[in-house]
Image 1 (cartoon, rainbow, N blue to C red):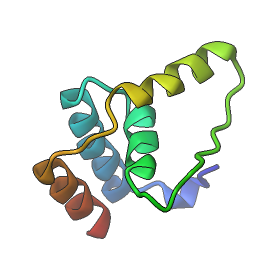
Image 2 (image 1 turned 45 degrees about the vertical axis):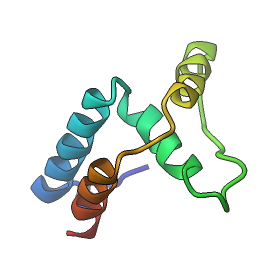
Image 3 (image 1 turned 30 degrees about the vertical axis):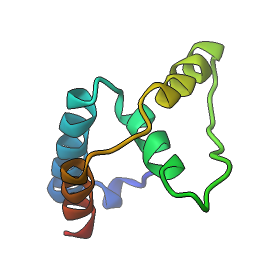
Image 4 (image 1 turned 180 degrees about the vertical axis):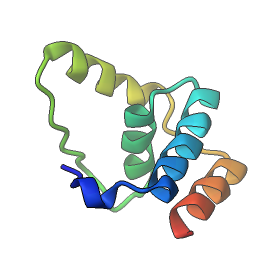
Length: 82
């Protein structure tokens, strides 16, 4: 969980920028995050926490689009590295 002192305008702007990339990929931010983790061949499992079966079903939809373009990867890395 995020603590209040961890939330800043900078963090909110990063989340918004990542969400725009996800929307362009026709994914939720959670789905894109799962896909981003799975793109790494060293990762064999992604553990997700859900409180409803609908959330789990939505997360599984990440598998519908796990490929990233070079431009998407560069944009995501640029957002995360600032």
